[in-house]
Amino acid sequence: MNETSSDEPLHRRILAAVERPILSGEWKPGAKIASEQELARKFSCARMTVNKALSELARKGLIERRRRGGSFVARPQGQAAVLEIRDIRTEVEALGLTYAYELLSREKGWARAGERKSLGLGSADPVLRLAARHLAGEKPFCLEERAISLRTVPEAEAQSFADEAPGFWLLGKVPWSEAEHRISAAGADRPAADALELEPGAPCLVVERRTWWGGRGVTAARLTYPAAAHALVARFSPRSG
Image (cartoon, rainbow, N blue to C red; front, side, top):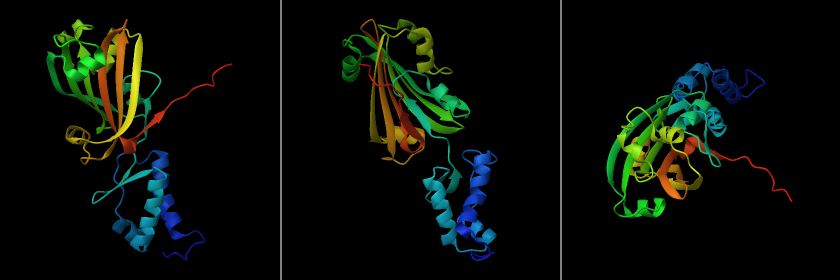
């Protein structure tokens, strides 16, 4: 096979051969794609031709290319809820992926300076600090770092959160009357890089969320997502009048 054996350029035929099983669902998110060398042998062409096809698929968001790791079917891009509060499991399942949860750490202590400011607490107020990892299709999806005010939610102290994510538990157990989201971009620090299997400094989307109940702080959470697999989406209507 060569580039003159068809009216269609060879790199377009390679692109179609890889794209078809991805779009049909035959190749699942995370599946590894044949290497450039293997595809070059299969289509009897130069690696540069294969690279051109794979680069176009990467630009379309269908595959992920990893340095020294090869190419993989891209995972659906997640959408963080900006104007609503929903649990991370709902985000993952909306993508059609299997959800899993891992508790990384749990500790009780007196409110630190940042927690006092965020939740309106005093230095003698207790908080429960949690770090957890959420997975989608067995791949890291989000790192959750959370402080819960035990002054406002004393029943949280009795929860281990080993099997149930704190955000999900809070949504089901504790009412909230006001919430604040702060969205920013940041490079992954060491804990985030380790939890999300990223290189330190890799771009991340960070959602900082605070909720109150009757003027009392409930929880402050920092949710860190790999930027390459996440987007912010908000739907709104024009203001009347």
